[in-house]
Image 1: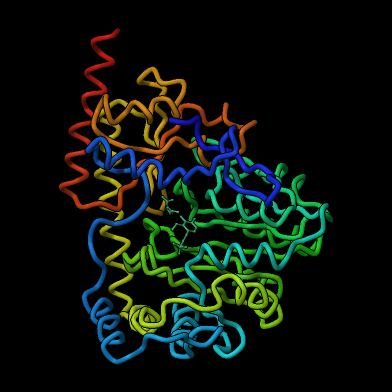
Image 2: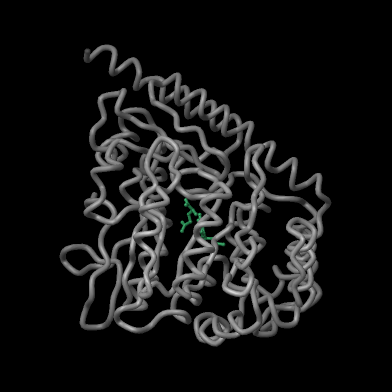
Length: 406
Ligand code: PMP
Ligand code: GLN
């Protein structure tokens, strides 16, 4: 297997995720899922649930297909879904959106992130500030836009940014501050002081804040507060979320972006040439999903929290130091107590050693920064309880292996 996770390189044809020989390489998530399939290991790598979401949502998509909702939807997405997104932002966050102008439907959060970066940057000196470790598509899109990534480190165990480092990272060259909260891969939820700082810095340097809130409903006893609700933030913030995680439909790729009409329009001008539109029969189904009662959202978070605790207890029992998450599908552990200094190598060997797949945090950081994350591994908790039980029973072998080698 190649060294993780490949690199963005310029080619005669542009930029792409390429290995040293110039060949295209899959993302870390695709690679680790393929490794799990090949070895029969329990896949706690790529973050996708192994159970379907609400039956009425699945039925709504089936009904839409049967009813002939199968051609191109409007460029901004169907009005009913945009209205449901606006209702959702009002119900959970008190935001008042105009569904005609302040909302656009995208091919998952991934397309919204790509379109936002391409729309809001472009000059060679432009910079995008991201919190590292970061979701893999951020660095890819920043490279595709031909601009610069500036990383603010999130360090174990708490993964909160240092406010002085954040302040130093944001300058007049900053076009976008890209904020993923709740945060993949660390499971951190930012506190009010971080949010306030981000808004103040964006105002001072006239930057746009782009938020990735795909785990907005998956926090564990702490509220999710969108930056767009902070004083002074609305007019310079684009908020992104998607249906995949909340409703367990990661393959449907229905996302949305909300914000002031002028910013949404700027992004739409790019988005229309990426996918144009997507997922017509899924759009009414996600409108129904967004209108599910509050209890659905509370129960979904509580169920994931219980799984996350189960996984965390099992990982601790196997000998890892667990860095307990405040939300998301993921739990990060430090494997150093098991004698691991190179988590990338450890993850490559894990299917053989214990029959489980996890993802090294080095896959989420810029090459020069990997030493700071070298013994950290991310495991996904969004699996059935029986699967988590099986995985932790397998991982206990590591404790026994390390005891016999001491
Ligand atoms: N952002 C983060 C932080 C994610 O973990 C993911 C993974 N689903 C995405 C964006 C992509 O979301 P979508 O599948 O809706 O494109
Ligand atoms: N968001 C998922 C994760 O972090 C993976 C999505 C993907 O495969 N691109 O595991």
